Image (cartoon, rainbow, N blue to C red; front, side):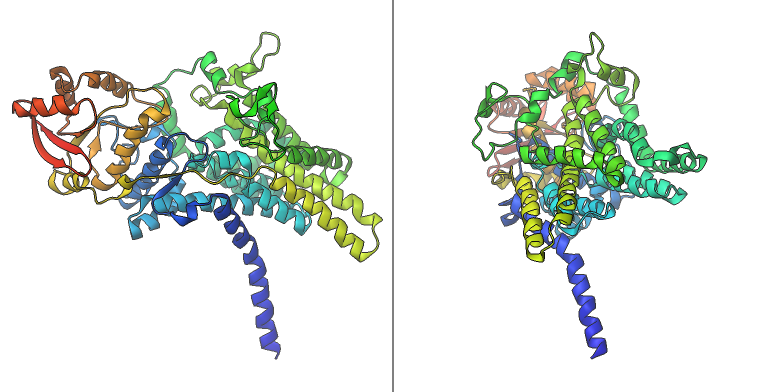
Length: 573
């Protein structure tokens, strides 16, 4: 009987530990519905208006898995923008997406791997919050509420079309590691802090870069008197060394690429910076049916929608109040408040002026990376994370304040239920709508022209896919991203491509290709080493190209795919 009881208790303990990830997984699947009904051939769009960025990130996940097979040989020389060296450094490399590689290796399905990463990131966001609140010794119901709130965070769900912006668990791990380090500043703690920050950077370089200054200005509150001890600085130094060793292969390559681009001008950065009023506009219509915010109709608002929810803000304000008057949570509250305010100020970018001085332009001019980071409003993610943590501090404060005044067990349970209910209401205040999915038959990898390139052309062949994009907006590059997705099956190098930044040579080529198949454009492709031209029949270039091939002088039609309406031409030398 004794061993059986012990075994039952062990199973019960394991079930309790599994409850958190299980609930967070269900919430992640429900909040991205109906993605779970078609995870192998659908891309969630969030608030993206085209599939350009999701398709591009599918390609990025594939390239990381492909590079792992080859031992990361030529990792930065991705097969786009040929013959550009280091093409992969023009965008977010997301090296930690390698954890989805086994799905690609086992199934060959790139989109399934992409969606696995998305759901995993949402789950880990909630779990990291749950763990952080547990480290703070908050009550279990508050831990659960915080995990749910972070999993359902509206800003993240509005960005699910941009995969690298979804995982914020690295930021939460960094804060948790700092909290542990503050309690006991050891060398191991310093190294763990450096490793946690490295995870943040390797998941999303934007988040890693944007976390540095708010964290540096806030950590003194957390570390306290330990800051004046030599051992603390030595341990922090070890953390910096650990972060440098882990991040330097990516950071150094990105820094080298950034030298190709001058710092973005002030007016341009202002267009990608938040306004204070943006923090009052939710990503989706509020349940209160609020129609006008900041004097504008919510449906017609063209700024950045950065409101985390009014109940969250109210609870965060309560958290600031309770935290500052409670000695045990005062340093934690000041840390969160400082980090939140710093991130808020930085998210305003050049819009923030102190007389004629613009603090953000100091970062642009003197701190590496900020001059090329165009989406300044993304500092808002740190504001939202701090709002959640302060809201949970508020819930904990309310529970702590109420508990001594209620002596009857039933009334105590009722009070806890009502207080936690308030937290759950705040978490569900702005729920994401049904996820918009991008589904396309083109995702089927059995397309004839792709098979032809993969099986009937030399492995070192270089292709040009026509048409090139001519619109400057993200949607204008949707076909380019689809060419890249196709590349994950035929593996041929392309002069085409899409990324956060573009090589100057590509922009010049794109301009020349407006005259394709004129002799100058064909000569330009020859100079680049192009062997084949892949032409869409529904483009304005299809008929002139077919006529040019009929002469037998410059182009030779080698394959036609009637079902996909694609023709492949060999470029004669």
